[in-house]
Image 1 (cartoon, one colour):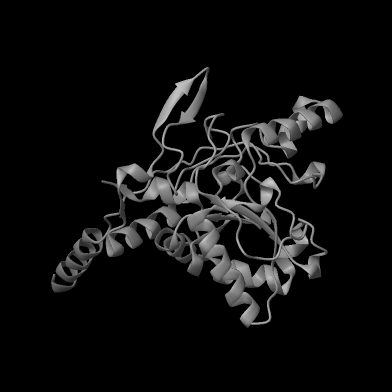
Image 2 (spheres, rainbow, N blue to C red):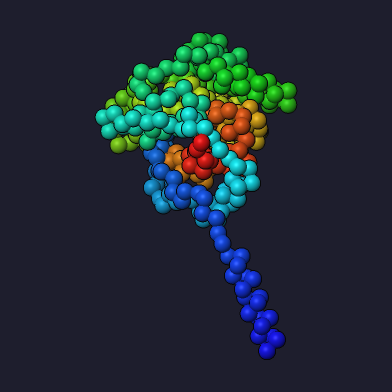
Length: 284
């Protein structure tokens, strides 16, 4: 009789611990692939539409992290959107955490007012080209990051920063004329959907990668250093490997996005994408 009571008591204890957290949205919208800066895609590299729900175990862990850290974010840091001609146009484009992709577009007239040329090494030298500019905050952070890397004998080279809507339109139209629209959208972003227009994105390479934008950059000493340290300066690796079904973009070890140090550290620690971060943090 005593053994039966013990067994029943043990079972009740086990059942009492079976509650689960359900704090995280279980799906992340899937977006089409971003431009590849002229690097052609092979058929097997094209992003295929898959089930875009986040793994349940990942959700539980993320929920636990939120419970521990009480992650909250002011509503002003989320996209404020207005539908125009069937497109979701971001109404607060100066937002440092603006989510720019194929689902959320920047206004065609938007150009940051605080663009400056960071004092770093560029692949095209000292020419003051459009792509040599970034927003002031992102530029200051980039200079600090490049300087710190140099102190550790890591020599980074900036390749492409700000790109206007009109410049993106020229690149997109040229690709359409060359390969047709169906293939063009796989390698070049539709005008308005490129992060480069925000003035917060920068493509980075190195002499060890021949100053080109290639997946091989991720295997270089410079690429590895960036992946490990960029968050300390407010930058995140925007399109990481293994997250293609969440970002909708292929792995781009050269493409870094400024989001601010606080957000970058949280994203790096949890191995999130910007999409995941904005879907998980609590809006206040």
